[in-house]
Amino acid sequence: MTATPVIVAIDGPAGTGKSSTSKAVASRLGLGFLDTGAQYRAMTWWMLAHGVDVNDPAKVAAAAGEPDIVSGTDPLGPTITVDGEDVSGPIRSQEVSAAVSAVSAVPEVRAVITALQRSIAAAAPTGIVAEGRDIGTTVLPDADVKIFLTASPEVRAARRSAELKGKDAAGLAATQAALLKRDAADSARKASPLAKAADAIEVDTSELTLEQVIQCVVTLIEERRRR
Ligand code: DC
Image (cartoon, rainbow, N blue to C red; front, side):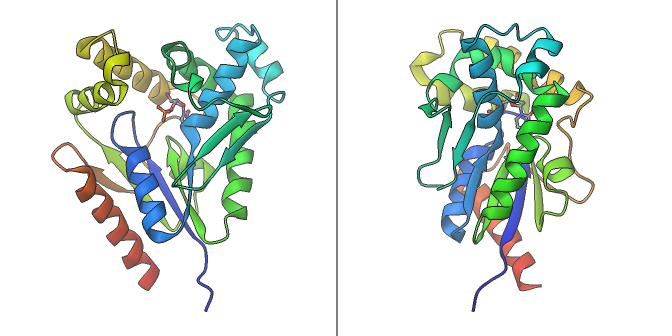
């Protein structure tokens, strides 16, 4: 018996555990995994590497079709390349983090990346867990399961700091400030902002362990599959 592919959308602001949760859920259920933030970061990395002024939306729009961004969707070893180059390290730099909201607010960038995301989801043989900001609202509005993860700003900053380990010279307060600034920009932009879909299930992860969040999402997907 071949099961119908299952499409899962996981959205929410930075530091809510979207990536860790999505990867683990995909691997337990045998689904693909797509980190859509990594694609916006890859686009931003390319713009910076090619000297495009990221604060000039017209220049960013004109170049949006140029980079060839390829995402590998194995949850045990996701990959991201731009024009054949592995950029999984450089896309996490502070330089890219500081510029990614401006680049991802440009409609032409969103059009290119949204089309890429839809083609990846459609080609996933068993289905996919896609995580980001606008997956349930814009990219995959017909997803079988939509989850919106939240957590308090303090918890999110602490998680992001722990993730950055020794690399975070800025400290907790600066991490929290940068994170809130990025969320505000991502929520306020005109083109498909960070938003909870009306039919998404909201899970506040502030008081939950990662394992509890994973279990919660796995249960929601299994319930949906039984129906
Ligand atoms: O998930 P992340 O923090 O790596 O995402 C980086 C940025 O990419 C985020 O600040 C906004 C943008 N993004 C987006 O606009 N839409 C998505 N679906 C995912 C990310």
